Length: 259
Image (cartoon, rainbow, N blue to C red; front, side, top):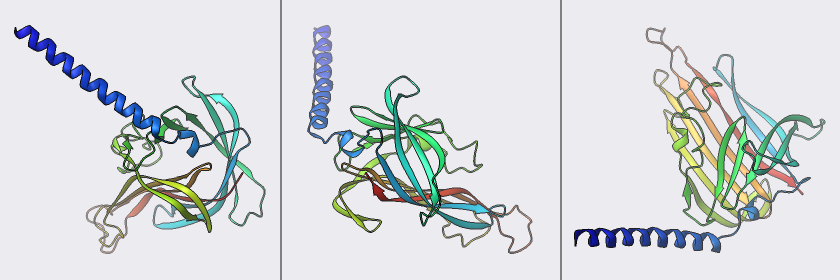
């Protein structure tokens, strides 16, 4: 009798799991496709205005360097684990567009049925995930290490970055980006947190993290704001009013042209 009850319970659990899986598949089937928000074909490009925040003079000065950056789909190639993907070439020139384009690196996009993966500098992100509906969330950095920028910056901003929750926070039927209106835009929110910002107490740690992307239908990425910096206070016993330093980066870019 007891074994019969156990079998019935197991059958019920399997049924519920199967039902949940089917419900998820139906929801994804009714969703717009990933390809709608990341159309990829050799020759396609998007040009952005880029503001890059850097810290100079041993982290005591903050500068914003302005550019135009062009992302061009160069070729269809397999990604690092053999799946069909695309190689993207990146070009840079001055913000006014008066200087020639200069190559500025490559990265890879792997479009899958249910998600969009981007690999850059050996860091793999899941930038979009089905279903494309408000409040869909996923672990977009789950392929990263605990502190993926450790080789570049000795800060703690990226501790636990692989556990960030990406969320389709907002949908806009029309949105102004760089002075032009784009339609059907999803906002992908990742993180927005501040500690001692602006830095008013020079003797306390300060930290700023912000990560937001926007994707437009039939275009792709149209906006990104990605900030990671830390203010490290002067060591104990320093003279009064001694300033600490910042380390990290900020990237803000918005589409100005595409084909």
